[in-house]
Image (tube, rainbow, N blue to C red; front, side, top):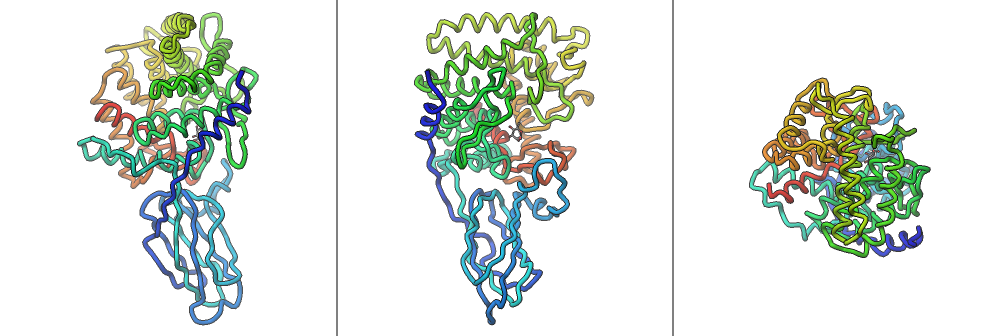
Length: 486
Ligand code: RAM
């Protein structure tokens, strides 16, 4: 009934407005000769455009001036030598420009940057020059002035909330970007967590709707799954990856949206797509109702190296089924019984086939005998285990050095969510403070894409320089702090 054009039109109607703020760095003027450099500090992480002026001091410049301008989300990035970067992800994500200026002038760089620090090096000038009039025009679609401060009384939680809302604010542009430095696109897994935090902070419903419609317009893969990412600049382009857990989390995002808005129109428009995602997943279950391995980048779950994520993926399916059958019940759709019945059957199958009674945890052939926090967390969130048993399972796995541990704040979100589900409030708060608070101890202005406390050089892409230090999926402490009144 609804086609791609319909969804793109809807997405366009919900284009959020951008708010701008001019930030002037700590230094206002710099006199320079060849080889000199100046470091500008914006005092905060910002996403936007940079401009500056330069002029002669005494004599005319004589020849064009060449500047190297480097933008860093932190000082480490400024200090890293980009020429040593070995390709994994493209080096063109590293924010550095070499520009030649023919005459004294005001220059506005055309590209958008995400940074706190800007280093300008005068690569060549024949005569001394003056650099001045530095300005960074920052943008966001988050209405910052309307944001209520968190009511947390704990100083660390307050600080974490500030940095988390700041992270979300930076990622809120014309859609929910995953990272304003990299990848600058809309991923379902990130969208889900950004939207969730947005309901408790900036409450910008337009951007959430827009993102849901952008995915609804996307092309499906041969299994019928939505694309796991889309681009919208300079025109709409549906991404080439189709990740099963992300396709399911689209459905969850629609459920979250209804739960927070009771907006029936959007749900009605997206309902068939949600059903189709669940049907596509159901089609890849074996006769015992357990997911079967598919080709390619099929499940994400986390960037943990070597992770076998199928048990976790099965948990995402259960989690989605539960949320979706509740949504159907709430809107009076008769199919809710079909989904809740299926949910019970799949839960039973997981307990029988994925749980090892002797080991006392979810460890099985599906994941080649690998023990991971990921499996336990998603089986808890999927409702296969509950209460004290689940609590003990979670704690022992988190403490087990031989178990695969989460490496992204994305997966850490779901660990925390599992703790709240099990009413482990104190443990959840401690977990939030230790993990997200740990990034603060390293001077984070915004929360990072990946963080392993014992390995600050960790990168999912083999080089920390390319990591995004302001990443959407890391913003959820504000959701927990505000939702649970911590
Ligand atoms: C990375 C990005 C993005 C995430 C995907 C799966 O490329 O960090 O945010 O959703 O992985």
